[in-house]
Length: 257
Image (tube, rainbow, N blue to C red):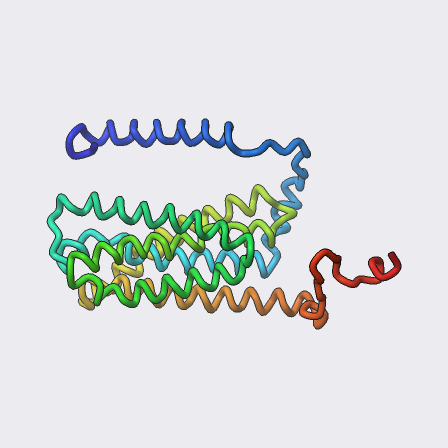
C-alpha cells in the first residue's frame, strides 16, 4: 500500500484494522459483571517494590529484545545473505506474521496448561532459531522457513510473559499491564540497538541474530531466577501438595471436611 498508494493510505489502513479489532473485542470477549478491584495510585505503585514483578519485566525485555535484535535487520539478511530481491521482502514479512499468529495461538493454549513450561520452551526455541539464522539464511527456501519460525518462537512467549507480569502484580492490574507494554517497547529499542552494535563491529549481516540468541539466553537466565524466587517464597511445602483427580489438595480444612 505504501509503495503504490502513499504512506498516508498505509496509516489509514492501520487505523481501519484498529477499528475492526475494537469491534471484535467488544463483540467476542465474554463480559464479566464483577466490578474490577480499585487499587488506587498508592497500591498500584506499591507493586513496583516487588522483586518478582521486576524479574518478570526483565524477562520480557530480554526475551523480546532477542526478537528485535534480529527482526530489525531482517530485510538486509534476506537480500544480502539469502539473495532475495527487495520486492520479495514484504511477502516474507507476511510469513513472519503468519508465524507470529500461530505462536500467539499456541502460546496461549500451552500457557493454560503450564505457564512456566511454555515460557522456558518458547525462549529455548527462540534461542535455537536465532542461533541457526546464519545457516538458514544461505538459501531462499530455508530463509523463508527461518522467518516463519522466528515469528512462531518469539510469540509463543508473549502470552506467558503477560500472564506472569499480571500474576505477580495482581494487586495493581493497570500498572502491571502498562509496565509490561513499556518493557516490550524497551525490548524493541534495546534489541535493535544491540543488533546494530553487532553490525557496526563488522561481524556480518546475520550477526544481529546471534546477538539476539545471546539475549534469549539472558531471558532464560532471568526467567530461571524468577522461578527460583517463587520457589523460595512458596517454602518447602510448595512441592508436597498432591492433587488427586476429583479431590482437593489435603489441607487442614479439607481433612476436617
